[in-house]
Image (cartoon, rainbow, N blue to C red):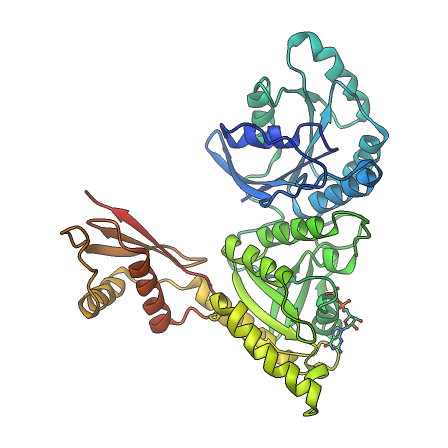
Length: 438
Ligand code: GDP
């Protein structure tokens, strides 16, 4: 889906506008400085067209961090979105922060739509008109709070947002798209250099901008791969505040472009909340997953402390990563090159699982076997039955079961587990949904 990113200074009304665009009824949550919203990407729809909305404003810096954080938002938006919705508070006018961001946005050649927010009635429209001076074309006067002008704004957004994303290309047959993710210092850029550096970089300037390439295409194992948002790996953000938020924003936005994620974990460190959070973002995105345990050169010796760390690591994997036990694991060293050749087969395996389609006949024969082997327990005198099932989608495999009543969560887990045992689906999340036929 095409990606639209919302950028703007704190308090210009980005969350109110996000809520409006998503058509959410709930009251706008007042942004408190330093508060991080959990979600940053949403599925939006307008006039029958779907798009991904990236809300870059989930973290509101204090006054001295504003310039850096709005610049970080803009940088991520420019790298990872098809179009940028830049929001200015018309009652305040353009500030120097706004002007700085406008320069970045204009240099990017990405379509930018200028929303002049807080124009609550017609008498304020001249305030919006002043924003022509920013050089971003027509300012669209809106009131995110009251909804005024939002429909016109969205109609206009659809005219500049490409039908097919140029960043998140969904074409079949193109190079497979890989995101390398992980918290700082786990070795993402070392891994990228090891993988890319020794190979021919096929196309360098993919984004076609004057800045660093956003993605890099590389031939590995006889095939061309596209590493998405390598700019985000190579260019490091230097933020005093909110670094975690912007890292996670970047991760979410990069996942929009990717088909498979390599989550890099540093084996010399304890597996952390942040590692798990990144894995959860991959699961939420529905992308395929490979786990790369890096820095194995630090655990190679049979000496006491390294041996002990290996034991703890096994235990941490069992405890913290049980929910992704299906993801292929490669134990590598980006420094020495150890086992780097295992990465491509792991990516191929994960993508193959992600693409899998199970024919309906085969799936139903299997369901018949499973329900015979283990019928659903009787609930309140009734026994919900599965009438039939089908694979509704791939990427990731998504199954729908048509049933005569609600299935227990445990029963759905049983079906999911058996599907995995039978088909493997190594490296891919799978979804099992249910439709009750009355
Ligand atoms: P990034 O922030 O995830 O991109 O991490 P970097 O690639 O910049 O690596 C962070 C640090 O870890 C650097 O000092 C690297 O030299 C080091 N490093 C990366 N990979 C390995 C590895 O396989 N083994 C060891 N011992 N160090 C590594």
